[in-house]
Image (cartoon, rainbow, N blue to C red; front, side):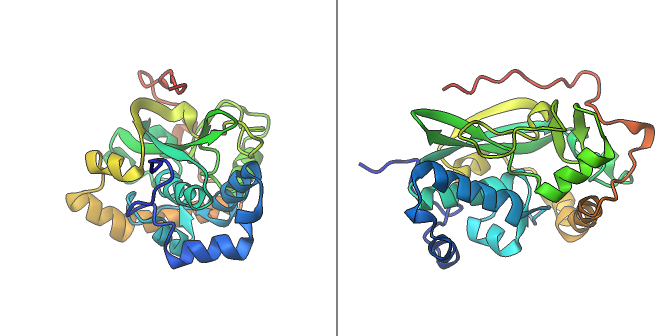
Length: 256
């Protein structure tokens, strides 16, 4: 019987030549299961830079070619690599409060950003249960720049981070769940066998807003991320780095 958590889909195209070649070149398939997870996870976290692609629902091979991604596109690539390595995984969808993106989104257009932004993480089957993998979103230089900009601070919900443990977040693969945007979540949209199912129901970038994002805004955001990576963290007017009142993170039940 086919395992739905190991199958390829149009987005999880792990049988494409670029993904097959990457897995073969790195020798990941020869590793034990836990090390396979760690190798794919570390690659997506640090060798795929934090940045904004043309849209969320991109095939994994396109994300790999871009060389950068955000929560949703990096999740697609990680899932494809995991399934290509024989590791069962599934997709968990959410929305996050737009305050988590403040500092990356230019202030000029921030008021036009939807309150709720699509978000996701990967759930991987390991050691008899499902683990949450979200800590791969920010690459190490971006995270280090935020830690240096806010020394001694633990709670931050801005600049692409949403965490209560900024100086020591759970982002490295140790066989446990990892998080870096969890405190920004404000709605749980459920678990899906593949991202294709999620994006068939939930899409955000459409019409004129989508055209402006793809053609202009995301490039502006990527330049701001590059500045953060270089240690130049933009100032947020008023110093707001928390969620706005009335938008507290939801309580999650991820044991299912």
